[in-house]
Image 1: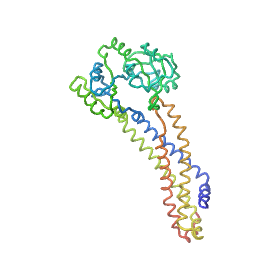
Image 2: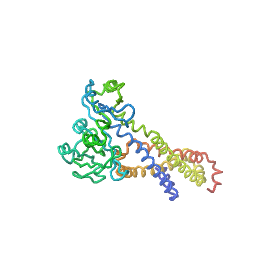
Image 3: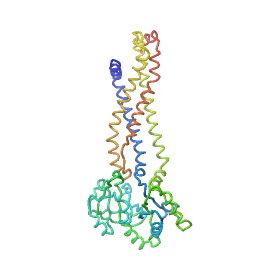
Image 4: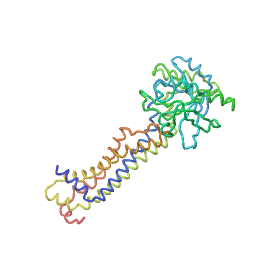
Length: 387
């Protein structure tokens, strides 16, 4: 108990220095937590993928389409339960910075494929009847203030022209995928295809991806190979992969960026470790005569080691606690501001563990040399020291 009281009092003998050191640790822990959360957010979509769904795309690239006629042939592959399809639209809402995903889908089969997608506002029948109707996720509705009946004007980038869609429903996910993407907009593929057929007939009857539901997860690899074999040597060969692998392929495009973010997060910790080490070195140098006095009074090297290391760890963990406390609201605000880019932005429990671990490493590493110096101080030389 005496040691703990002494550690506490020593830590705040130089309030300004200790306060600035704690502030630095807070900033470092917060930055580390946010950068790690950013990395985690990239993988969230893949982690929520179904184990019984496959995605088929053009083997060359997603930029190339597939004929709609492939649908029936895929459905005929043994083990396939149902098939739907989707097209990336890529429209711009007012400004390019207002990004959110838009997909043209076969509405009935798409909603059968994703039974966890539930309308919480609007009318499903009205959506089916309105060829220009759309449904949007709850986050998208909250961000732009969209309501059922509102018209969303989009300027086509992939499909030129001005497009207007009427909101017929607002959805959320229920069940296992309660945290799934609720920032998307879905509308009728048939409306897109009919318009394209008039403006650019050669692009009609084409889709971006087929989404396939299978009976058993253990047959996933076999069915994927069978589908690709069906279209081998055709004008549009296919690449079929699990829904998770498909989602991870987008993450792989940003692999270098993610690696850099990870490195930066640890560089931040190394920088604050240097700051902390400098603080503890200054503290030990100033108190060398005090350590010599304690040694002369009979306190052993172990006590002095514990005194210096305890002070360092105390400062580190105070900064860590404040940093973690700030991480929660900052992450929530960040996630809300960029909800369409990172639909699922939450601090994982592992991130908190990493933050605590980093604080412990910083506290111990910064105390090593000062603690050894204090424990091995010569009483006579220490008493001569004036700090």
